[in-house]
Image (cartoon, rainbow over all chains, first blue to last red; front, side):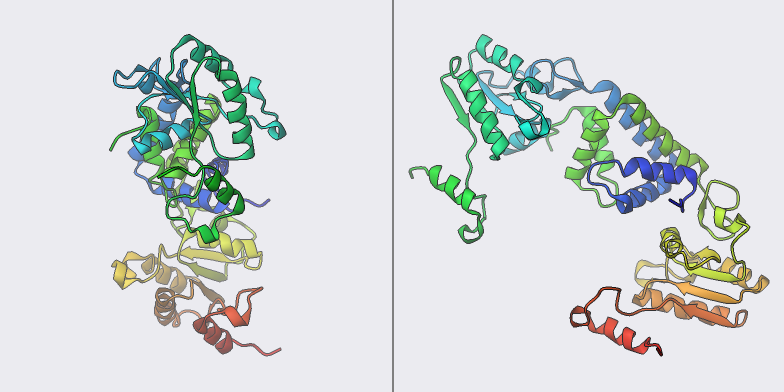
Length: 200
Length: 200
Protein backbone atom coordinates (compact mmCIF):
# COMPACT_ATOMS: atom_id res chain seq x y z
CA UNK A 1 0.00 0.00 0.00
CA UNK A 2 1.16 3.52 -0.76
CA UNK A 3 1.24 5.76 2.31
CA UNK A 4 -0.08 9.19 1.58
CA UNK A 5 0.84 10.58 4.98
CA UNK A 6 4.06 11.58 6.64
CA UNK A 7 5.32 8.64 8.70
CA UNK A 8 4.48 9.82 12.23
CA UNK A 9 0.96 10.68 11.09
CA UNK A 10 0.52 7.34 9.29
CA UNK A 11 1.65 5.53 12.42
CA UNK A 12 -0.81 7.36 14.65
CA UNK A 13 -3.68 6.77 12.19
CA UNK A 14 -2.76 3.11 12.14
CA UNK A 15 -2.82 2.90 15.94
CA UNK A 16 -6.13 4.74 16.18
CA UNK A 17 -7.82 2.58 13.56
CA UNK A 18 -7.28 -0.39 15.87
CA UNK A 19 -9.77 1.13 18.31
CA UNK A 20 -13.20 -0.50 18.48
CA UNK A 21 -15.70 1.11 16.13
CA UNK A 22 -13.04 3.30 14.52
CA UNK A 23 -12.47 2.91 10.79
CA UNK A 24 -9.73 4.46 8.72
CA UNK A 25 -11.70 7.66 8.04
CA UNK A 26 -12.47 8.22 11.73
CA UNK A 27 -8.87 7.42 12.64
CA UNK A 28 -7.75 10.07 10.13
CA UNK A 29 -10.11 12.64 11.62
CA UNK A 30 -8.94 11.80 15.12
CA UNK A 31 -5.28 12.04 14.14
CA UNK A 32 -5.90 15.49 12.60
CA UNK A 33 -7.68 16.47 15.80
CA UNK A 34 -4.66 15.40 17.87
CA UNK A 35 -2.35 17.24 15.47
CA UNK A 36 -4.33 20.42 16.07
CA UNK A 37 -4.46 20.04 19.85
CA UNK A 38 -2.29 22.37 21.92
CA UNK A 39 0.87 20.50 22.93
CA UNK A 40 -0.08 20.52 26.62
CA UNK A 41 -3.45 18.97 25.75
CA UNK A 42 -1.78 16.16 23.79
CA UNK A 43 0.54 15.65 26.74
CA UNK A 44 -2.46 15.51 29.09
CA UNK A 45 -4.09 12.90 26.87
CA UNK A 46 -0.98 10.73 27.11
CA UNK A 47 -0.85 11.18 30.85
CA UNK A 48 -4.49 10.11 31.10
CA UNK A 49 -3.70 6.97 29.09
CA UNK A 50 -0.70 6.09 31.24
CA UNK A 51 -2.65 6.91 34.41
CA UNK A 52 -5.40 4.49 33.45
CA UNK A 53 -2.91 1.76 32.60
CA UNK A 54 -1.00 2.21 35.84
CA UNK A 55 -3.71 2.96 38.35
CA UNK A 56 -6.81 1.05 37.32
CA UNK A 57 -6.98 -2.40 38.83
CA UNK A 58 -9.63 -5.06 39.12
CA UNK A 59 -11.50 -5.11 42.42
CA UNK A 60 -10.71 -8.52 44.03
CA UNK A 61 -14.26 -8.74 45.43
CA UNK A 62 -16.50 -7.84 42.49
CA UNK A 63 -14.11 -7.48 39.48
CA UNK A 64 -15.20 -3.89 38.86
CA UNK A 65 -12.47 -1.49 37.69
CA UNK A 66 -11.00 0.48 40.55
CA UNK A 67 -8.29 2.98 41.34
CA UNK A 68 -8.14 1.77 44.94
CA UNK A 69 -7.41 -1.69 46.27
CA UNK A 70 -11.16 -2.32 46.82
CA UNK A 71 -13.56 -0.59 44.39
CA UNK A 72 -15.71 2.38 45.33
CA UNK A 73 -18.93 0.42 45.42
CA UNK A 74 -17.57 -2.47 47.48
CA UNK A 75 -15.98 -0.05 49.95
CA UNK A 76 -18.88 2.41 50.13
CA UNK A 77 -20.58 2.65 53.52
CA UNK A 78 -24.05 3.29 52.17
CA UNK A 79 -24.57 0.26 49.91
CA UNK A 80 -26.97 -2.52 50.84
CA UNK A 81 -24.69 -5.47 51.39
CA UNK A 82 -27.47 -8.02 51.30
CA UNK A 83 -28.36 -7.37 47.68
CA UNK A 84 -26.12 -8.68 44.93
CA UNK A 85 -26.41 -7.90 41.25
CA UNK A 86 -24.59 -10.14 38.79
CA UNK A 87 -23.58 -8.48 35.52
CA UNK A 88 -21.60 -9.66 32.51
CA UNK A 89 -19.37 -6.62 31.97
CA UNK A 90 -18.14 -3.62 33.96
CA UNK A 91 -20.09 -1.29 31.69
CA UNK A 92 -23.31 -3.01 32.75
CA UNK A 93 -22.72 -1.65 36.26
CA UNK A 94 -23.09 1.83 34.81
CA UNK A 95 -26.43 0.92 33.22
CA UNK A 96 -27.66 -0.36 36.57
CA UNK A 97 -26.30 2.63 38.51
CA UNK A 98 -27.98 5.06 36.17
CA UNK A 99 -31.41 3.70 37.12
CA UNK A 100 -30.77 4.92 40.70
CA UNK A 101 -32.93 2.00 41.84
CA UNK A 102 -30.32 -0.49 42.97
CA UNK A 103 -28.16 0.23 45.99
CA UNK A 104 -26.62 -3.17 46.56
CA UNK A 105 -23.27 -4.57 45.45
CA UNK A 106 -22.13 -6.17 42.21
CA UNK A 107 -20.33 -9.13 40.77
CA UNK A 108 -18.86 -8.87 37.26
CA UNK A 109 -18.69 -12.19 35.43
CA UNK A 110 -16.37 -10.98 32.68
CA UNK A 111 -18.71 -12.21 29.93
CA UNK A 112 -21.41 -14.83 29.50
CA UNK A 113 -21.33 -18.54 28.72
CA UNK A 114 -20.81 -18.69 24.98
CA UNK A 115 -19.66 -22.07 23.62
CA UNK A 116 -19.32 -20.75 20.07
CA UNK A 117 -16.66 -18.35 21.27
CA UNK A 118 -15.12 -20.97 23.52
CA UNK A 119 -16.28 -19.25 26.69
CA UNK A 120 -17.39 -21.72 29.34
CA UNK A 121 -18.11 -21.29 33.06
CA UNK A 122 -14.40 -21.79 33.82
CA UNK A 123 -13.50 -18.65 31.84
CA UNK A 124 -15.84 -16.49 33.91
CA UNK A 125 -15.64 -15.19 37.48
CA UNK A 126 -18.09 -17.83 38.66
CA UNK A 127 -15.99 -19.81 41.13
CA UNK A 128 -15.45 -16.84 43.43
CA UNK A 129 -19.07 -15.78 42.91
CA UNK A 130 -20.28 -19.07 44.37
CA UNK A 131 -17.80 -18.73 47.24
CA UNK A 132 -18.94 -15.16 47.84
CA UNK A 133 -22.62 -16.06 47.84
CA UNK A 134 -22.09 -19.08 50.09
CA UNK A 135 -20.09 -17.09 52.66
CA UNK A 136 -22.37 -14.03 52.80
CA UNK A 137 -26.06 -13.74 53.49
CA UNK A 138 -27.71 -12.21 50.47
CA UNK A 139 -31.39 -11.44 50.70
CA UNK A 140 -31.65 -11.26 46.93
CA UNK A 141 -29.42 -12.00 43.97
CA UNK A 142 -30.40 -10.19 40.77
CA UNK A 143 -29.05 -11.62 37.53
CA UNK A 144 -28.76 -8.68 35.13
CA UNK A 145 -27.55 -10.21 31.87
CA UNK A 146 -28.89 -9.54 28.39
CA UNK A 147 -31.94 -11.47 27.17
CA UNK A 148 -29.95 -13.34 24.52
CA UNK A 149 -29.44 -17.09 24.10
CA UNK A 150 -26.07 -16.79 25.85
CA UNK A 151 -27.52 -14.59 28.60
CA UNK A 152 -30.40 -17.01 29.16
CA UNK A 153 -27.99 -19.94 29.40
CA UNK A 154 -25.78 -18.08 31.84
CA UNK A 155 -28.71 -17.01 34.00
CA UNK A 156 -30.09 -20.55 34.13
CA UNK A 157 -26.67 -21.98 34.98
CA UNK A 158 -26.07 -19.44 37.74
CA UNK A 159 -29.47 -19.84 39.32
CA UNK A 160 -28.85 -23.58 39.48
CA UNK A 161 -25.52 -23.00 41.24
CA UNK A 162 -26.75 -20.37 43.66
CA UNK A 163 -30.20 -21.57 44.69
CA UNK A 164 -28.81 -23.58 47.60
CA UNK A 165 -27.41 -20.41 49.18
CA UNK A 166 -29.99 -17.71 48.41
CA UNK A 167 -33.73 -17.80 48.69
CA UNK A 168 -34.54 -15.12 46.17
CA UNK A 169 -32.83 -15.21 42.80
CA UNK A 170 -34.34 -12.86 40.21
CA UNK A 171 -33.59 -11.82 36.69
CA UNK A 172 -34.22 -8.37 35.26
CA UNK A 173 -37.40 -8.14 33.22
CA UNK A 174 -37.63 -8.55 29.49
CA UNK A 175 -40.36 -7.18 27.23
CA UNK A 176 -41.26 -4.10 25.28
CA UNK A 177 -38.82 -1.22 25.75
CA UNK A 178 -40.37 2.04 26.96
CA UNK A 179 -41.89 3.96 24.07
CA UNK A 180 -41.97 0.93 21.76
CA UNK A 181 -44.89 0.07 19.53
CA UNK A 182 -46.31 -3.46 19.81
CA UNK A 183 -46.87 -3.38 16.09
CA UNK A 184 -43.16 -3.17 15.35
CA UNK A 185 -41.72 -5.35 18.08
CA UNK A 186 -40.38 -8.78 17.09
CA UNK A 187 -42.21 -11.93 18.07
CA UNK A 188 -39.64 -13.16 20.57
CA UNK A 189 -39.88 -9.90 22.51
CA UNK A 190 -43.68 -10.04 22.43
CA UNK A 191 -43.56 -13.60 23.79
CA UNK A 192 -41.21 -12.48 26.58
CA UNK A 193 -43.45 -9.52 27.31
CA UNK A 194 -46.51 -11.74 27.52
CA UNK A 195 -44.82 -14.27 29.78
CA UNK A 196 -43.51 -11.48 31.95
CA UNK A 197 -46.92 -9.86 32.39
CA UNK A 198 -47.67 -8.49 35.81
CA UNK A 199 -50.87 -7.96 37.73
CA UNK A 200 -52.01 -4.35 38.01
CA UNK B 1 -23.32 14.60 37.82
CA UNK B 2 -22.40 11.40 39.58
CA UNK B 3 -19.28 9.73 38.24
CA UNK B 4 -19.68 6.01 37.96
CA UNK B 5 -16.08 5.39 37.05
CA UNK B 6 -12.84 5.42 38.96
CA UNK B 7 -11.21 8.83 38.51
CA UNK B 8 -8.41 7.99 36.05
CA UNK B 9 -10.92 6.16 33.86
CA UNK B 10 -13.45 9.01 34.02
CA UNK B 11 -10.73 11.45 33.05
CA UNK B 12 -9.66 9.41 30.03
CA UNK B 13 -13.28 8.95 28.91
CA UNK B 14 -13.74 12.69 29.21
CA UNK B 15 -10.67 13.39 27.07
CA UNK B 16 -11.67 10.86 24.43
CA UNK B 17 -15.22 12.17 24.15
CA UNK B 18 -13.75 15.46 22.97
CA UNK B 19 -12.62 13.73 19.77
CA UNK B 20 -14.60 14.49 16.61
CA UNK B 21 -17.42 12.01 16.03
CA UNK B 22 -16.87 10.32 19.38
CA UNK B 23 -19.80 10.35 21.83
CA UNK B 24 -19.76 9.24 25.45
CA UNK B 25 -20.53 5.59 24.60
CA UNK B 26 -17.72 5.37 22.05
CA UNK B 27 -15.37 7.13 24.43
CA UNK B 28 -16.24 4.53 27.06
CA UNK B 29 -15.56 1.68 24.64
CA UNK B 30 -12.28 3.27 23.60
CA UNK B 31 -11.19 3.76 27.22
CA UNK B 32 -11.93 0.10 27.99
CA UNK B 33 -9.94 -0.83 24.91
CA UNK B 34 -6.97 1.20 26.15
CA UNK B 35 -7.35 -0.33 29.60
CA UNK B 36 -7.08 -3.78 28.07
CA UNK B 37 -4.09 -2.93 25.86
CA UNK B 38 -0.73 -4.39 26.87
CA UNK B 39 1.25 -1.69 28.70
CA UNK B 40 3.83 -1.44 25.93
CA UNK B 41 1.05 -0.88 23.39
CA UNK B 42 -0.41 1.97 25.46
CA UNK B 43 3.08 3.41 25.72
CA UNK B 44 3.49 3.13 21.94
CA UNK B 45 0.19 4.95 21.44
CA UNK B 46 1.43 7.82 23.60
CA UNK B 47 4.71 7.91 21.75
CA UNK B 48 2.84 8.10 18.45
CA UNK B 49 0.81 11.03 19.76
CA UNK B 50 3.90 12.90 20.97
CA UNK B 51 5.75 12.03 17.76
CA UNK B 52 2.98 13.59 15.66
CA UNK B 53 2.88 16.70 17.81
CA UNK B 54 6.65 17.16 17.69
CA UNK B 55 7.55 16.08 14.19
CA UNK B 56 4.69 17.03 11.91
CA UNK B 57 5.05 20.49 10.44
CA UNK B 58 3.36 22.43 7.70
CA UNK B 59 5.14 22.41 4.35
CA UNK B 60 6.08 26.08 3.63
CA UNK B 61 5.39 25.58 -0.08
CA UNK B 62 2.03 23.80 -0.22
CA UNK B 63 0.83 23.70 3.45
CA UNK B 64 0.61 19.90 3.41
CA UNK B 65 1.58 18.13 6.64
CA UNK B 66 5.15 16.96 6.60
CA UNK B 67 7.75 15.34 8.78
CA UNK B 68 10.53 16.96 6.77
CA UNK B 69 11.19 20.62 6.13
CA UNK B 70 9.61 20.35 2.66
CA UNK B 71 6.79 17.81 2.24
CA UNK B 72 7.19 14.54 0.39
CA UNK B 73 5.19 15.64 -2.62
CA UNK B 74 6.92 19.02 -3.04
CA UNK B 75 10.34 17.38 -2.71
CA UNK B 76 9.60 14.31 -4.86
CA UNK B 77 11.60 14.08 -8.07
CA UNK B 78 8.88 12.42 -10.13
CA UNK B 79 6.04 14.96 -9.75
CA UNK B 80 4.96 17.13 -12.65
CA UNK B 81 5.87 20.59 -11.48
CA UNK B 82 3.79 22.36 -14.11
CA UNK B 83 0.48 21.06 -12.79
CA UNK B 84 -0.98 22.53 -9.64
CA UNK B 85 -4.01 21.25 -7.76
CA UNK B 86 -5.66 23.57 -5.24
CA UNK B 87 -7.48 21.81 -2.40
CA UNK B 88 -9.25 23.07 0.72
CA UNK B 89 -7.88 20.64 3.30
CA UNK B 90 -4.90 18.31 3.65
CA UNK B 91 -7.21 15.29 3.61
CA UNK B 92 -8.35 16.28 0.13
CA UNK B 93 -4.82 15.57 -1.10
CA UNK B 94 -5.39 11.94 -0.11
CA UNK B 95 -8.61 11.79 -2.16
CA UNK B 96 -6.73 13.14 -5.18
CA UNK B 97 -3.72 10.85 -4.68
CA UNK B 98 -5.97 7.80 -4.45
CA UNK B 99 -7.20 8.38 -8.00
CA UNK B 100 -3.64 7.81 -9.22
CA UNK B 101 -4.48 10.21 -12.06
CA UNK B 102 -2.80 13.38 -10.87
CA UNK B 103 0.97 13.60 -10.61
CA UNK B 104 1.42 17.32 -10.12
CA UNK B 105 1.86 19.36 -6.95
CA UNK B 106 -0.65 20.78 -4.49
CA UNK B 107 -1.63 23.89 -2.64
CA UNK B 108 -3.75 23.58 0.52
CA UNK B 109 -5.97 26.59 1.18
CA UNK B 110 -6.82 25.66 4.76
CA UNK B 111 -10.56 25.90 4.12
CA UNK B 112 -12.90 27.71 1.78
CA UNK B 113 -14.37 31.20 1.71
CA UNK B 114 -17.26 31.02 4.16
CA UNK B 115 -18.58 34.40 5.35
CA UNK B 116 -21.07 32.78 7.75
CA UNK B 117 -18.17 31.26 9.66
CA UNK B 118 -16.13 34.44 9.31
CA UNK B 119 -13.68 32.90 6.88
CA UNK B 120 -12.61 35.32 4.18
CA UNK B 121 -9.76 35.19 1.63
CA UNK B 122 -7.40 36.67 4.24
CA UNK B 123 -7.85 33.63 6.49
CA UNK B 124 -6.82 31.24 3.74
CA UNK B 125 -3.44 30.48 2.15
CA UNK B 126 -4.30 32.57 -0.91
CA UNK B 127 -1.65 35.27 -0.78
CA UNK B 128 1.23 32.85 -1.17
CA UNK B 129 -0.79 30.87 -3.73
CA UNK B 130 -0.93 33.91 -6.00
CA UNK B 131 2.77 34.52 -5.43
CA UNK B 132 3.53 30.89 -6.19
CA UNK B 133 1.46 30.85 -9.36
CA UNK B 134 2.89 34.16 -10.58
CA UNK B 135 6.49 33.07 -10.03
CA UNK B 136 6.18 29.58 -11.55
CA UNK B 137 4.97 28.48 -14.94
CA UNK B 138 1.98 26.21 -14.47
CA UNK B 139 0.51 24.60 -17.53
CA UNK B 140 -2.72 23.88 -15.66
CA UNK B 141 -4.23 24.79 -12.32
CA UNK B 142 -6.96 22.41 -11.13
CA UNK B 143 -9.30 23.72 -8.47
CA UNK B 144 -10.47 20.69 -6.49
CA UNK B 145 -12.92 22.06 -3.95
CA UNK B 146 -16.34 20.65 -3.06
CA UNK B 147 -19.33 21.61 -5.22
CA UNK B 148 -20.97 23.58 -2.41
CA UNK B 149 -21.95 27.25 -2.29
CA UNK B 150 -18.74 28.02 -0.40
CA UNK B 151 -16.67 25.88 -2.77
CA UNK B 152 -18.22 27.55 -5.81
CA UNK B 153 -17.49 31.01 -4.37
CA UNK B 154 -13.90 30.06 -3.60
CA UNK B 155 -13.33 28.56 -7.04
CA UNK B 156 -14.75 31.63 -8.75
CA UNK B 157 -12.66 33.96 -6.60
CA UNK B 158 -9.47 32.01 -7.23
CA UNK B 159 -9.97 31.73 -10.96
CA UNK B 160 -10.37 35.52 -11.06
CA UNK B 161 -7.10 36.00 -9.21
CA UNK B 162 -5.08 33.44 -11.15
CA UNK B 163 -6.26 33.88 -14.72
CA UNK B 164 -3.61 36.51 -15.43
CA UNK B 165 -0.86 34.00 -14.70
CA UNK B 166 -2.17 30.69 -16.02
CA UNK B 167 -3.84 29.88 -19.28
CA UNK B 168 -5.73 26.79 -18.21
CA UNK B 169 -7.67 26.88 -14.97
CA UNK B 170 -10.05 23.94 -14.48
CA UNK B 171 -12.34 22.72 -11.80
CA UNK B 172 -13.04 19.04 -11.04
CA UNK B 173 -16.29 17.77 -12.53
CA UNK B 174 -19.59 17.67 -10.75
CA UNK B 175 -22.52 15.40 -11.58
CA UNK B 176 -23.89 11.97 -10.81
CA UNK B 177 -21.59 9.86 -8.64
CA UNK B 178 -20.62 6.49 -10.10
CA UNK B 179 -23.34 3.91 -9.48
CA UNK B 180 -25.99 6.53 -8.75
CA UNK B 181 -29.53 6.34 -10.04
CA UNK B 182 -30.85 9.42 -11.90
CA UNK B 183 -34.21 8.75 -10.32
CA UNK B 184 -32.90 9.40 -6.83
CA UNK B 185 -30.42 12.18 -7.46
CA UNK B 186 -31.35 15.70 -6.31
CA UNK B 187 -32.22 18.39 -8.81
CA UNK B 188 -29.10 20.51 -8.22
CA UNK B 189 -26.85 17.54 -9.00
CA UNK B 190 -28.89 16.71 -12.11
CA UNK B 191 -28.54 20.32 -13.29
CA UNK B 192 -24.76 20.16 -12.72
CA UNK B 193 -24.59 16.84 -14.53
CA UNK B 194 -26.50 18.23 -17.48
CA UNK B 195 -24.36 21.36 -17.69
CA UNK B 196 -21.23 19.26 -17.39
CA UNK B 197 -22.22 16.90 -20.21
CA UNK B 198 -19.46 15.76 -22.51
CA UNK B 199 -19.36 14.67 -26.11
CA UNK B 200 -18.90 10.94 -26.65
